[in-house]
Image 1 (cartoon, helix red, strand yellow):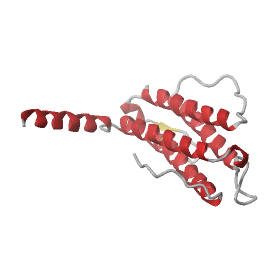
Image 2 (tube, rainbow, N blue to C red):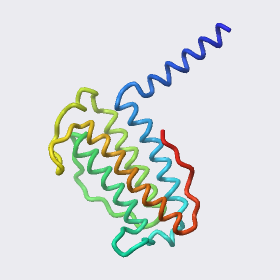
Image 3 (cartoon, helix red, strand yellow):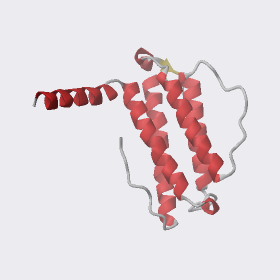
Image 4 (cartoon, helix red, strand yellow):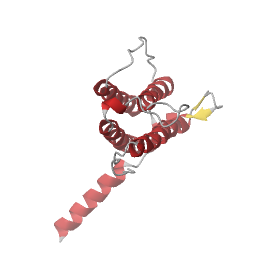
Length: 168
C-alpha cells in the first residue's frame, strides 16, 4: 500500500509540474496541437490541397501555410532576440508543407522555452494595440486552433473523417 501511495504522489506531482506555469502549460498544449494539425494535413489527399469551399476562402494549402507563417512571425517577433534573416522558399508539396509545419511548431516551442515567466507580463506593441507577451502566447495557440477548425470543415466537405479532437 505504501508503494502505491508513493507512486500516486509522484505521478500527481509530475502531472502538476507539467502545467504549473503558463509556459509549461503552453508547451504541453503546443505539442498536442502540432500532432493534431499534422494529422489533419496528412488526411487530406495532395490533389485536394488546392480545395477551398468558396471563392473568398483560402485553399487547404493556403490555410496550412498561413498557420506556419503566423507561428514564425509571432514567435520570432515577440519571443526571440534573433530575427530571421533569409526568406524561405514556400513549400509546394504536401510532404514539404507538413515538414515545414513540424519545423515551425518545433522552432516556436524552442523559442518559447527560452522565455522567462516574468517576461510574460511585458507589454509589447501589436497591430491590435499594446498586448502582454502572455496574450501573444495565447494568440499563438488560438490562431492555430481557429484555422485548424476551418481545415476540419474542409475535410468534412470532402467526405474525409477528421481525427478525433484532443484538447490537451
